[in-house]
Each structure stands twice: as structure tokens, then as C-alpha cells.
Image 1 (cartoon, helix red, strand yellow):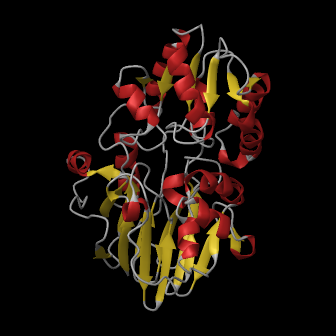
Image 2: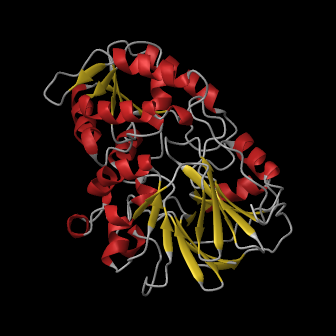
Image 3: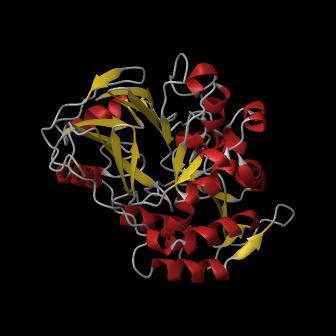
Amino acid sequence: MMLDLLGGFGEKGRTSLAVNSVNNRILLDVGIKVGAAGAEYYPALDGPVDDIDALLVSHAHEDHIGALSWLLSRGYAGPIFMTAETRAEAPATLAAYAEPDDFRRFPVPDHRIEIFEPGDTLRTGNLTVRTGRSGHVVGGVWFAVDDGKSRVVYTADVVPDSNVFVMDTIPHCDLLVFDASYGADPVPGAARAREISEWVARHPQGCLLPTPLSGRSLELIAALPGPFAIHAGMRSSLEAQIGATGAFLPDVSELLRSRLASAADWADADPLPPLPLLADDGMGEAGPSSRLLPRADQAGFAVLLTGHLPAGSPGDLLHRAGRADWVRMPTHPTLSGNIDIWEKAGRPDALGHSCPTDLLADLKNHIPSLRTQCRTGQRITVPQGSNNENPDL
């Protein structure tokens, strides 16, 4: 089995990985890189795409699905595997991040979508693909790909210590391609959630919290210390996410349902509220927050950014100018989580995705088998059989 590293290796964004075995080739995710331009915006997928037998999408965030219309425009005509939740969220992501003409000509092709549930096992050619809940978003999954000789696990984005979502245990494998977004950050999610709650409590006059529509929004809702408002356009999506009760830790869906029911709806024409206001997206690149960030800045309305800020994004510029605060709400693994994933996977060879090179070097001090030299554009071979306790899944 061989892997083509098509995006997200030595960089954050355009996450994409091709798995090759015998005459079978599948693509895991097809993301874009916010802040990049030209070819670097898309996966490093050169040449024709008619040798791709299937596309499997882990979830609907832009760095994992934002290049779908681009891939279709290049002639990809095969099946697309995703969960129902990912399918529901994909059009909004593509509308915000796809090239407009590509999205107009190549929207999500419903007739080619193969819906599966987290926990299902998929088969394409000689490859068997086991899936599990990611703990990152409702409907998000990891993939364990097996060709009978070796197994590679691609975690996509996972959160082993989420306060809201369930993450299923990663199986033993011969190569672990894991979510290294935070490098060796040792601060656990619970501590960050308390820090955010305390920050919000210090701003009783109101504040803006830009957030992705899925995933982190629910983590924030669970962490907020009191009443809050949401952009009205978020409500139906948040209700649908909360309705997927199997994605949540015990009793969390009821807590979130109660909290959302009491949240105030806010519209663009309204004055800024004396409450914490959640609005998508998290970087100010698209959605209501792209309009709200400059409005909040002009009004002196406090802003708290809680996720990844690509260089040059509106959120990044505001933070660097000292006019917005930043506290990371972990929606990726911190150090203890990644060590635990690696150990439970059998301490295999490992690659870290979605991480700049300097942070990978720090992480290798804790995960000795981490290959820090791998970069987007390279092809690597998966070791055979050393850690695969059940080749037939």
C-alpha cells in the first residue's frame, strides 16, 4: 500500500490523502487552504483524476471538503462516500469556499453520494475501510483502510477529550496519519473551556464569538456561563446537529437542546446584543461573521476568537492589531490525546497532518515514531503487517 500526500503535510489546510493498493486508488478528503491562492489553494493532485475509484469525505469543514467542486470540474466521476450530516452541510461550505463558477457548474452530485453511518465498514475494490466517530463534529469520522497486508488509519480531525462529542477508539495499524493541528500543546480542553467561560463572564456588556457552524459551536454552547444569542441563520443547523443524539456523550444532547432553546435569535439588522453572540464562520472569511467582525471592531464590541486563524484572515488581522482576544477551544487533540491515540494504535509509524513543521519537531519528542520530514507532494510506502492485529477487520 502506498500513500500520496496531497495536502495538509507540513502545512495547515487542503487536507487530502490518496491510498493506492494493487489497481485501486481512493481519495480521503479534498480540502482547500484558506489564505492560499492559485494551485496551493487546492490539493496537489496533478494530472488526470480518472484513476480515482472513490472519494471518502470525513466531514464538511472547508479544509476537508472545500475542493469537491474543483475535483468534479477536473472530471472525477466516481462515487462519493459521506455521512448524512456531512451531505447536509456540504453545500454551505462549498458556497463559501469553492470557486463560484465551479460551484455553479458542479454542485454536490446527489445521485453519486453513498451515505454511510459512523461505525460502518465500507468496501471499494480490494480495500476495506472501517469508520468511527471522530469527536470533532456530528457525522464526522476517521478511516481505517486495510488491503489485507497492511492497515493505515487516517484520523482526519478528531477530539479524544471533547466535553460534548464521542470519539471511537482508533484500531491498531501499521501507519497512523493523525491530527497534529496543535502540535505538543499540553493544555486540555476542559481547562480551555473554563478560560473561555471566565473571559465571557468578564464581558457582561456583550461580545462576539465567531465559530464554525458545526463542531465548535456546540462546544462553546456547552461552555458558556449564562444566557447567549446566536445568529438566527444558525438555529436550524444547530438543532439538526443536536438531534443526532448518538454523536454525544451521555446527557449532553439534552443539555445542548435546553441551552439552544433558551438562546436569543439575532439578525443582521439588530443592534449588537448585551450578550455573547455566536456567529459563523470562525475566521471571519465567510458567513455572518465576515460582516460582524468589522462591525464589532468599529463599535468597540469585544471579540473572542477561539480557533485556527490563517495568516491574513480577517480574524488574524484583528487579533494581530490587538483588537480581538484569542483563547483556543480545542477541537483537535492536545498532547495527551495524541499520545493516547498513538499508544492505543500500537505505537505505529506515524505522520502528523494539519501542522506546521516546527510544531511537528516538538511533537516528535513525545511520539518517537513520528516522521517529521514528510511533506505535501510526496509518496510513501505503508509498512506491512507489524501492527495489524486483525487484517480482515
